[in-house]
Length: 535
Ligand code: NA7
Image 1 (cartoon, rainbow, N blue to C red):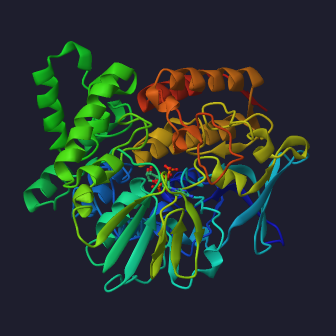
Image 2: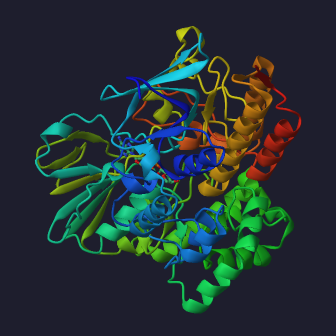
Image 3: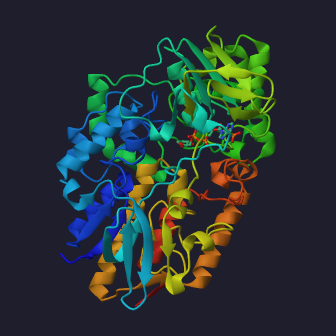
């Protein structure tokens, strides 16, 4: 060891992507070091410890698929596992594959600089540790840079306050407490329905309501467990063939071609089924045709009215500025019924905005709401945020943050011109950003591993995309997005976060689906990496 440790590859992040990338690179015989800011493995599942955090993907469709032994050893207890179980699973994986010995924890990478003379990357952590590697692989996660509002007085609040993605490791007791939650995205919905069970009083500060659908979670019984273990190849085949890597695929019929009775029956069935079927397994055109989407949104509107007793509250909970499924659909268990409880108050902060945080609570235009605990479920600087928090400098000292300031430009969401040997797992414009994420992570990691193996065999030490390839891919990403209604809504997919006014509205994910994306990646590899320059 010198003062600067040298490796073949440095991976940033020990979540699902970083852990799997480590497994694969070790198999190639490469020296690898993973840097992780947390004190242990797990990424998303390490940080998001808020009460109520759980999968919206079927547990058995979410775990790693690469090891049959692991699949047979691990047992999920519920169809949609809670966060503590997922974190236990990831720890189990880390133990089984002895991953921790190559991971440096509590090491946040502050900067990464490309050294043109050596064609390698130098990184420095916040605590001054330096390392160097030929390849820099980011596994930083698409939703890992939490954002807080910038209300005046936040630091003067006298109670306890937490962002959901920075939840304490010790349990927070809500009994007898007045709790406030700001935010009603997928996270807010999960935390609200859980806190409402024990808090003395809960005030929900909602700006934009979302279309929420029932999760229908249940424990997995012994027979089902055996069936799951016997059918993993089939489970993963179905995921591979579906647009978003889920067990749900769209119905090929148009909403507009079936009778009113038929579509009602279909939607009732989907509403009563577990998971994302109502989003990913709906009529194919609800996400591309406004008329089709309007009908679906009307169905969901009726459901809210049926479940929420007070019609005025039901109205407040009904989205007005976007159609069903055009933003991430929160899955819920009794969420709407929470608003029938006497101890729960819904405050519409679109109507009466939050003006400041006071020592005692939250002050809106109309009133001050006193709380003992304040929960910020206010989301993330999505997809590009975790990159922006590292000072990444490529050829000529060019900053990645500056390059992507008007929106990311990539080739396959895996590389970007001017930053050779930097590979961005689950990066912007990568199908993994709109996916049952481990399924697409495995695709990304396997592709990168094959690339590194090819480069080793062919004697290449340098890879970067051609400018035309980057332009074509970026254009394709925006064209595909423009065909969907997702591109019309304000959401983290489109880079809209009102706490980040400088962030440009673009489309950050890839909406063309993981099968098409996977096929394109395979084609590029088979052609000897068409679109890339290898030296
Ligand atoms: P989201 O989906 O970005 O939701 C953040 C929520 O916080 C959303 O309801 C926001 O309202 C609200 N918010 C943010 N800032 C404010 C301020 N200043 N005032 C009032 N309300 C605010 O993040 P999540 O963590 O729920 O979900 C992220 C993903 O993680 C999710 O899609 C899953 O895939 C897992 P807004 O909509 O901006 O009006």
